[in-house]
Length: 135
Image (cartoon, rainbow, N blue to C red; front, side, top):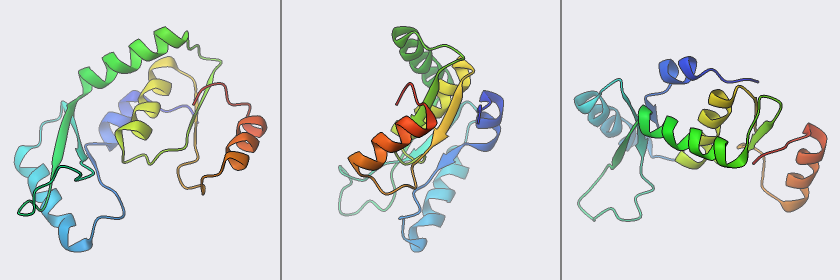
């Protein structure tokens, strides 16, 4: 698939892990609604630095920063429209989501394997089968 940056912007404004307890999902949605701005993507933090009294932690990343980063990576790697980006990270995580942005800005294909159980063998087989050039 060739992701569209416009579609990503229209469809993505809050990235939540499916592992968040249902009792906390509404807290994240309420925070998002309270501070929402269309120029940002809100990403749920892993919580590694969350204090015992905190129930939710969101990080707002501006689209301009995401695009700047993606353009820098694409330029450094000399990405072209002929490349195929593969993602093996969760798409609700900045690592996985940023690969979609890179592919969209470069106009190249994107393959999402975030739901595939990780193993080096599977990784290699998918890279070969799908003719992946970047991951």
